[in-house]
Image (cartoon, rainbow, N blue to C red; front, side, top):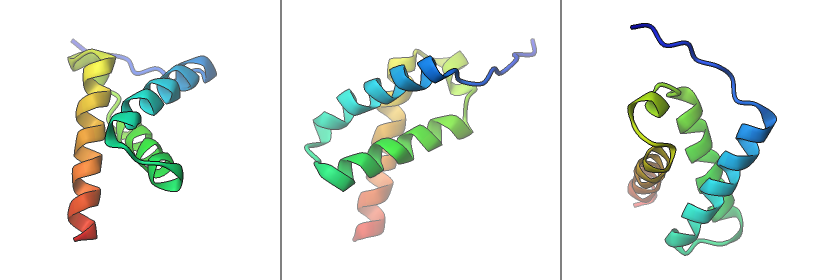
Length: 77
């Protein structure tokens, strides 16, 4: 089965940004570090839109943010 991928509407982007912001709080980051985590997670999700067909939005956000955070920590060491 072929799935069509639609672009995110402005409302979709706002909702996703809000969700990303809430989940980022769990990492106890502030300011630019928190903003960068949100931005990098948003970009990672945007490059893999098919993930939203495979799992819930919340699960996709949590898993992707964890991957982004882990990769940032590894690159900082």
